[in-house]
Amino acid sequence: MRIGVVKEIKPDEYRVALTPAGARELGQHGHEVVVEAGAGVGSAFPDAEYEAVGARLTSVDEVWATVDMILKVKEPLPEEYGRLRDGLILFTYLHLAADERLTQALVDSGAACVAYETVETDDGRLPLLAPMSEVAGRLSAQAGAHFLEKPRGGRGLLLGGVAGVPPARVVVLGGGMVGYNAAVIALGLGAQVRILDKSIDRLRYLEEILSGRVELVYSSSLEVERSVLDADLVIGAVLIPGARAPKLVTEEMIAAMKENAVVVDVSIDQGGCFATSRPTTHSDPVYRVGSVTHYCVSNMPGAVPVTSTFALTNVTLPYVEAIADQGLREAIAHDPALARGVNVLDGKLTYEAVAEAHGLEHAPLEQVLPLEPV
Image 1 (cartoon, rainbow, N blue to C red):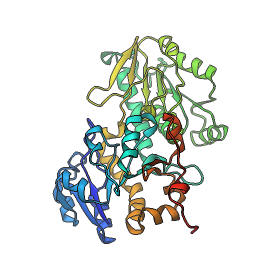
Image 2 (cartoon, helix red, strand yellow):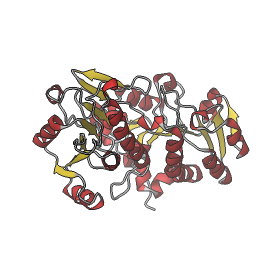
Image 3 (cartoon, rainbow, N blue to C red):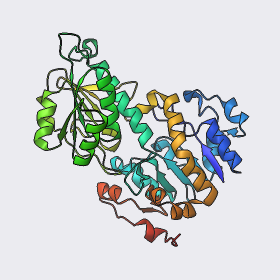
Image 4 (cartoon, helix red, strand yellow):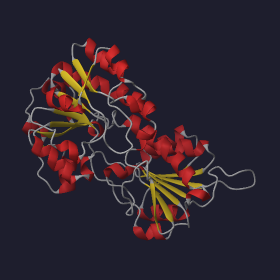
């Protein structure tokens, strides 16, 4: 199979979908890897490193026009929609529930579109989302600490306080991979941390692994409101796989927060969990609603592309190899987790949560691509 890697064009996105080591592995499996010149520079991979492992450097036009499968990090932007075509496999983060225009463009293109974030194992793990959730969770606490500083418009608090002065109060909405990693960094900086989650089993697990160092609260609308109003920093870490994030924090709650408090919405890729959230960029990361600073960067891991690119390739490469070695049909027949990653196929929307988000028709994958039992 011919596999293409293109440079990301989303603002302030420096990650690349495949490391040179990954390109070498694919070459050893007998596949041809073609890379857009300059695609890896933002992640500290010069073109020469790709050429040294057998990948071929070429133009962006040739990559899109000639490969069987495109590997990306972020969703196609409008200027890339016209490059999508029938027969192409697109493997990337898509987050379609928050973007109806992109969803329709993918359906119209005829391409087979597989989303990293909806590849899901039978026990509910999201293996291709997990490493970027780790990165984003850790960055969220760092960003929150930064924007709590007075010169940045914050309350003028040191997250960990000092002897005789209490620490900042950090509330984390959601105790999954993002929330856990946000809490770990906030704890490490000395903050007082509260996590809210709907799963009692998850709360029990967090109690065990965090050794009782955080407040763990079952999430209800009343507890969310109480916690938000008492917080200096709120981190939104809510995820319903493939679906729009629920708006847990209302405009009224934001208006009633402490003056110069900070909210960080890691859920922004899926629409955000604060009613006042809108996507921002690393170049212009924050805005204010009333006196509350909002940090809603939609590609947070792009700020640390070297770490992120290695972490991403580590988990995506086995799935890329499976698709390349077996073809998409056989690969998804052998791996139900990968099958759940298919969002669009043959002009049909095959992921139910995305269809529900936009009021579009859902065509179950088994109807679009009947598979023989393996």
